[in-house]
Image (tube, rainbow over all chains, first blue to last red; front, top):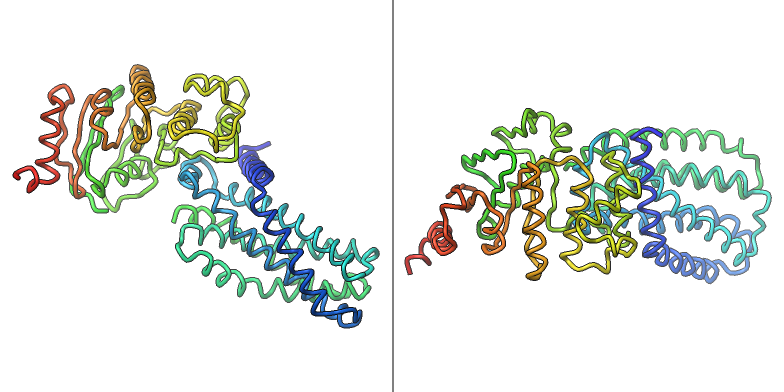
Length: 226
Length: 223
């Protein structure tokens, strides 16, 4: 393993271990997910056509809101005991820290998404069996886009006093291409159509993921140093 | 923070204690020395390395223990060291990490979470992190704060050991008592200016207090 990969790995290990012990984000996200599902159930009622039409948007609304909670916290940990300063003093390319943080955020969001999709299927009595494979592809690409830019903006706003306000204000407009593509692709998948039908949305999603990831890798050092 | 002609030259094995009132610029000066803050002018050399031009080359030579000690509360002592060792590319093997913890007398609590540690223990964990590398310059910000008598004595002995190994230390503090015990030189910084820089051996504790009051608060000293 190269020194770069080792540093990214140790950041991922540290963040996941810390989260496993503190469960600060997971507990908040779990109850938030339950609350959302309860509200969806209450609002939509038993009408399956309404549910099918609204489900992609509702799912992604849940993921984005959960993502705002999880991503916004990811650098708060580094402020405690000046660990941010310690990270600045580490040698080598700082983008390894970004990739480690990104991987940890994706892992955390993946747990929330699995729980949310599972409970959504259960609560709303929606058959997801056949759509799970394509849905996993769309979720993976959408989560990467959301987390790539979210991790960068979380780092940018972590040291700012009004970070709770600034973080969503920065993140949500930047997420528009990802959200358009993911909601549309999710709709195609949930309607039981082949994933190829959402090909143009997936291409947009992949392009957005690549752009966000490259921007994150290239600019993280300046963000950390600012 | 603006510094006005602040110039320091420290040799191997030398310990400088930096005194000054709140807002004098002590922490900022330490951060400049640590290459965390880039000054708009001046030079910073660590041995042969121009630290402003090549901070990446200078950083392995610097060990910084700031207010927070860079400790993750939900990791154990040994996990904290493993993380920082891996981040710095040092040997992160168990014997090396346990050895560093033993040097700061934390080996008995190696597997306990840092959250349960006192301020003094966290500071010692920060020093264990420095011991993992090849730091030749130790920068300490208020290291005596929150330490009891025994903790202060331990820290003074640690600093004597670092000095005996040829390490250079810059220590910013408000604590006259703890600081004078380890200092080779004493400097007073106020308003971004270095108002005094003298060998500690030339300064008795009473004289230093009188000088400190006169330089940092002349009106109060006259009264």
